[in-house]
Length: 391
Ligand SMILES: Cc1ncc(C[n+]2csc(CCOP(=O)(O)OP(=O)(O)O)c2C)c(N)n1
Ligand SMILES: [Mg+2]
Image (cartoon, rainbow, N blue to C red; front, top):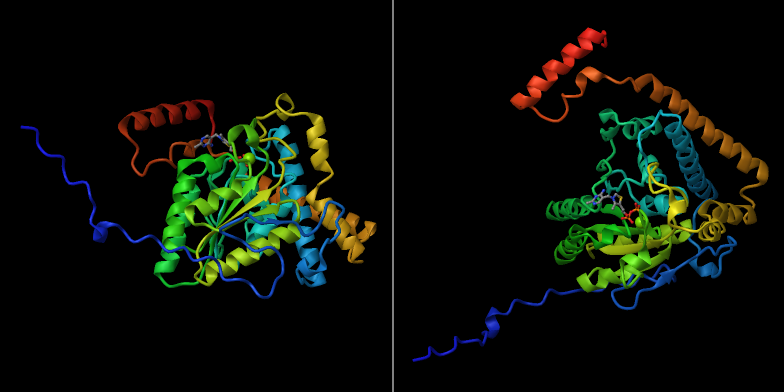
């Protein structure tokens, strides 16, 4: 006799309750497009000529604050350029330049306070400087000294992550912890267009949405994951659309417009602090320079493409805006550039004083207790250093 088919009907009481997705509360104090769960809004405040298209969208920032933001972007560029020279001269390890992404960098952490958290990927030193990491610390880090990875006193950040997307679930986890402690801190985490396809990043979106965790996901869509252009990596190149599928409201922002980045991040941080959960900001930008110093982009992209983006330079655009406002003139631009260059050079001097290789310590950082075979290798290696007279 054939056994009867098992009962397939599921009692309604066994069906889990659908998680409730509450759209963000409408903001009354701004008229810019707000972060959304439905149709993804686009946000640009400063156009490529540095003009404000709709004055009601302009954030109200004091002159001194606007200049502080501009200076941070210039300092980031100066450090970037200097590090590249140092790498070419053998003073720096491989590093990942952020040229062209300065507005995204500064805008994404602008509204954070000291007690908030920032969990960055490797192309983030502009944001790290703003958060309180020192220039010489970042130089040490990229030159391979473990001291560079130590989070400075009073800074509530994670060291940056090189394993693509690996830090994003950690950011979500920190945010869940913050919520459980009933604290009102917020976490910002950034990652690239390539990283958005990592399972870990998608899992982080899901956990954050389910727990309504106070985390802001910033996807820096800079056009490439090493040599892979975004439109060849994914079939829906507007990456912000990934958010609503998980219940994470999202917005697509001109990432070369620092004012748009500031407005979007401010709203996202306010939402998270108010208990309205996570959001996703896609910052559309362009990596002007190399993926890392081990890369040659001429092999996979045309100069004309780079030139098109040069015209959208985030620093030049903000500079025009500040000049139109009468806050900058060519002399002030030159003076400020020299000042930032000087700051980087002074930090380089301090870096050089500290960047002394200690070959006797190479076995010391990985294990609390060395496995026997490494103990053996260490003995042989130290004996070799002794024979060569290396301290
Ligand atoms: C898990 C993992 N896979 C591969 C790599 C090698 N890798 C380093 S950067 C990178 C591309 C990442 O692109 P994207 O997320 O767009 O960030 P971007 O470098 O453009 O800032 C890859 C594949 C890695 N570091 N980690
Ligand atoms: Mg990328």
